[in-house]
Figure 1: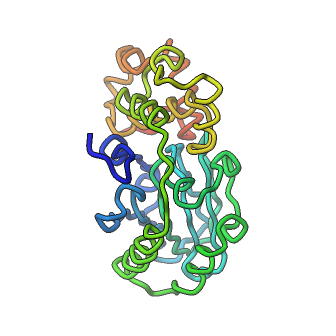
Figure 2: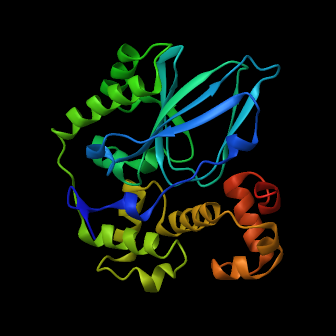
Length: 274
């Protein structure tokens, strides 16, 4: 497999989905744009969530579990910037009726690699970026303002991260990244105890997953499995049949629905309703 910075190319194994806004509002747009080729092994996408007109009511934005860490801020207030860690359930943000949010979604493990931050310290919450990586918080505060186009946003981020990469040494534990690759290649459907025998003790494995991902290998696998189902976009018919949840390693339909709702916020029937 192709490697980037001596690490397996995670982008080729994992494409996280954030689908919900397309179903949520007529006057809200969500757009993802791909970074410069040279940083695509680290950053999955830059994204923008914005209103096209002033909404009549406040907007509730639901973020589904995706295994990633994001930086985000509102373009009217770039000095107020945040980082959101790995989340083991969906998160709902109450937003105002007029907004223009921009973010950076890092591929799994890459935020801790870049900034030498323990991912578990950010898990299941968001934090002021200045308290975590003050230099990046200052960069956003001083280089972004209302009215920028998507290409201008992309260019400013690309230049920043390309410069940052010149000064970073990646810490590669082949055994850990081999375990991560096994999870991704199996779409999260595996036996953690038996299938992740890469030379690490269960204690070492847990410590590395908590540092680089933000949670255990088991929880990460569950998120990957959920994300695989999202990407597949199953039909109502396949949801009604038992095959879908058995194929994805669930014990029964109730287990599948409960876990899906925890990660997404609604049942599979509602999420994939036509």
